[in-house]
Length: 276
Image (cartoon, rainbow, N blue to C red; front, side, top):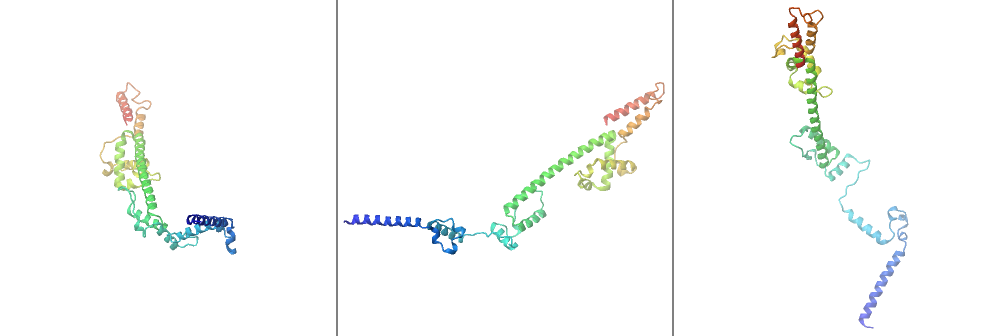
């Protein structure tokens, strides 16, 4: 037998032995290789051969040195959770939170500082804190826009209501009411004090009406009168018309010396009422 033939037979024999060993391993019940006290461990029930078991063991060994974060249980202390928050990326102090907000932000420095302190206690990450602050800033802007719309609407409604009531005397009544209110309370108080429905005090028809009534009773005071000429309200016009047109008056008696004047005065009053 030459050397080449001997080598081929040797390799064939070695391969046969490896194959035979592999077949033997596969035929062996893996559970019989586990010590008696560990055979019922659930974590070992998934293995059917030594090869899979060794792979799993090597993989777990690689994870031993990994930077893992232990999950605190129900008995964990604040300090235990602080460790978790820090590893996740929470700033060391509340001052570490930085927010990207528009220049015209609705949140002042005091509000942001208080929020940062609370966020730090809760373990919020910077991205989470930024998201919450952005949400509330947008909400504040929407609320302000909505309030501005409501304020303008309340002003328009108040004006329409009072114009109908005061008629031609509207401008004078409003000027007198405003003079009284401003002198009594001040512009800032009237503008910033809100009723239950959010209407500024100075836009409330009830408040304006009350001020106008009070101003009328105090009309001798110069700070109430302001500038303007005397005018009649719708109610006063109706009363005057009723007086001029009562039965037996000059308005109905064409032979009366003041008949023409009475008719002209009534027409003027109706025109004044319509124009108001």
